[in-house]
Image 1 (tube, rainbow, N blue to C red):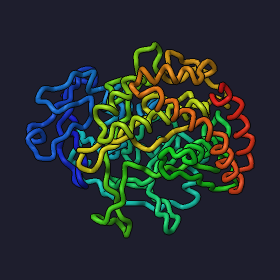
Image 2: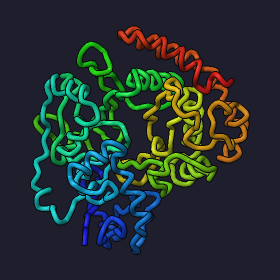
Image 3: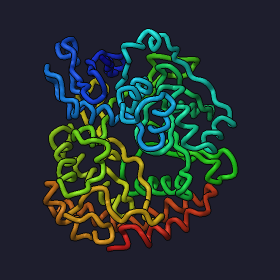
Length: 428
């Protein structure tokens, strides 16, 4: 019988929530503990896991907790190295669950003695070590995941690091030490992907879309093999409560992506048939966010922007909700993972249906007008947001390109031209 204990950080303190128990990953079920349910701080750890005494089904359990794990090559590599089936999410989660996205922590009860004795520390990285992350790509980042027991979702090679911006120093967290930034490598098959993402993120910022602090880390000549992409974690907040080796330790804020909140498997993050993903996304915001009207408008604007920029990889795991430190208030997280995929001639299919249409080349203003009724936003308001975003798009992208050009990224202007030509903006 496998038994994983689940903890969550609330106002900076780890609280025991419950456990996942089963003969294997096929029948494992999560149940809240009586102690947690009776506590004054009890709150659901997911919209898909409301407070209840009964155990959740194995499928509901899997959909949420498997959503904490990396995907693609990183997951396969981890599974190979720990000699388990890549479908065995329990074993992989037990290996990587010390530091997940959000505030969840997973402890394997069979190894709890060893895990509890692990030392929380920050190991300073040399420039050469940081450069190795860029050069070796996903294989190196997966090795770091194993060494630090860190679970980061997504298919791109990424690691969690601590950044001391005052001294421009990078540290590798060990044990239970939280990271402050998520750092990704360039994609071996997609040229200038880091520049692409930063250009898109700056454009979003110029249009008033909330984004986390992001920057390019150049460890050499500016070539793809020398650069990394750093994103400041919005689910980590620097605190004075604890210090390790002179570094302030951040507290964890909980988050969950829309797939987890909607109870949808990560394998179904792309909508293959029109089954109402966009409506369900807005229902989440409407029923659970503390300021539903404002958050619905933000979500709508981001969906409009992903169309304009040509991002067909804007699946439901790339939209998230973030909780405050006591889990009582929920809002839309800052926007992240925005890339113009169309400049690489990737799929024309958006990640979910908009106004009954999936093909980005067939989407237009009328499609969004139709979608407004589906999501429950007044059409006049929805189209005002769409039109303002579209009208400001060219200037916002041009300013972002100019800013990157001034920093030495000369390819930004070419990428800007490709986005104008191949993104959804060209359909208007």
